Image 1 (cartoon, one colour):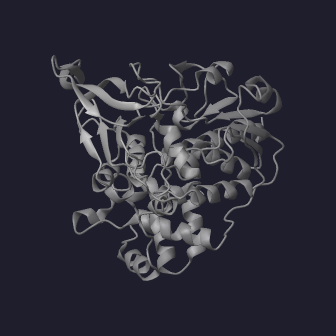
Image 2: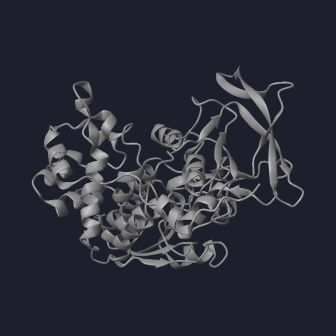
Image 3: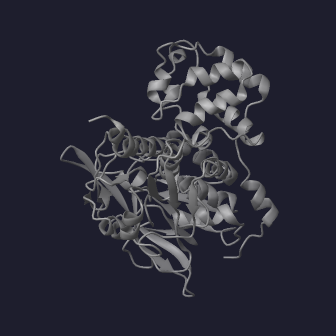
Length: 451
């Protein structure tokens, strides 16, 4: 297949942020629609408990710094969340105006206030007076940054260990630029760094520094490493050139322009948010045709509704009840096709399980395959820390986020699964805060109480 030429400039334009922010007049008018409910259900629906009526009222009165501070006080990654949170399911879904007209556009207003803070280079918080205690945070993503920010405000000396070149985790590397520009996440990182938090990048705990060393040097540790790579499919042809890990694929578009997808037929395996991101990235990279292949139906897909709608608007096709069997090579080490089988859902133990339909094999002509079937766990690190876990999912107390080791706390995707936690940026932020509060209570507050 002859590659289609698409200029680097065109691709760069394709990755510019899709959704424009509110204009001042729009923001004020929308703010004035808010009823400023005393017992606001929108606050209860926000995992971080942002005082939504308060920040909206501050926009209406022109107090932009106060508005941004109210948001970021509750949610250390509030600028990111204004763009990526499923607000229609959370705060906006709980708005009382749903019963009479349309909900307040809370996410857009949150973005308006935090964008103002970013443009005006605002520093919103200050570090607390030193309490003489130190904490190591493993992982500089939403959960780790939130924990670090709160700990610094409590007066702890905090060091964040981040494996990548820059902190921010999923927000910096794993969410497509046309929905979340990288500079938004990096501004949130700087808000934390300005509190005196030491952020050590390009350092992998368990390799460059041991977990044992951290436990020796620090009074407490927060484990916030998220998840790892996409697992292997376990099918023939998986090692061919042109088969990509969705996490790596999306990350590659955050740093530079890639021209190897232009004109190609792309199959994305999986139907979560990362699969949608990989598919929409492929469209913007100039792919000729993009299909998402999923062994269940749209009812079981884990992607947010707004992500699903976004992909459909981009022209992504969906092949439901379809599972890959093998990837077929082109004879030169590349991909030529993917053999698939049709599936049906069978009820068992109260759940619907996908089962192959006999004699339903068929071949899809594709030039690239992107795997987006979940992620593996950082099991070696969890075991190095000696923590109780279920298949790498760290077990924590839901109130304190404390692990089986009383000096180690955990937050974010490292605790998601087995009915525990939620896989949202905003939930990770709240878990990081909870861990920080629990550490403060354990190491400072309880020790200061008179006996």
